[in-house]
Image 1 (spheres, helix red, strand yellow):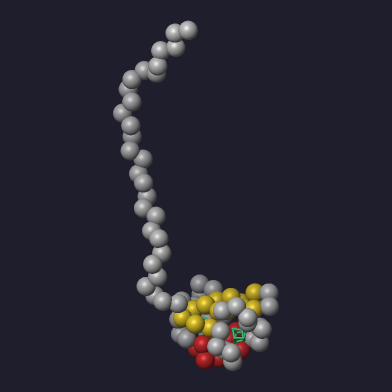
Image 2 (tube, helix red, strand yellow):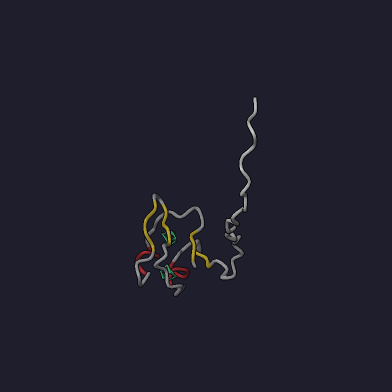
Length: 82
Ligand code: SF4
Ligand code: SF4
């Protein structure tokens, strides 16, 4: 996965070289989308070196699904003697 650092002036070089049109204008700068095939061409196309490859071994926090354990509560509700 590739990303673009802040400060992109939007010169458009990377958009022009990306073979799969994975880079889209984003305000002043650009954003690399999921279409990116990690070819790396855009890295050398950027005149100011803003495009970089993110580590593949990202340690994202994994949310383990907590399965709902059915509680066996067969007891009748509390007594409401008033
Ligand atoms: S790495 Fe290749 S596919 Fe990905 S955004 Fe750059 S030029 Fe496009
Ligand atoms: S080549 Fe670099 S400066 Fe130009 S639009 Fe792409 S990321 Fe921005």
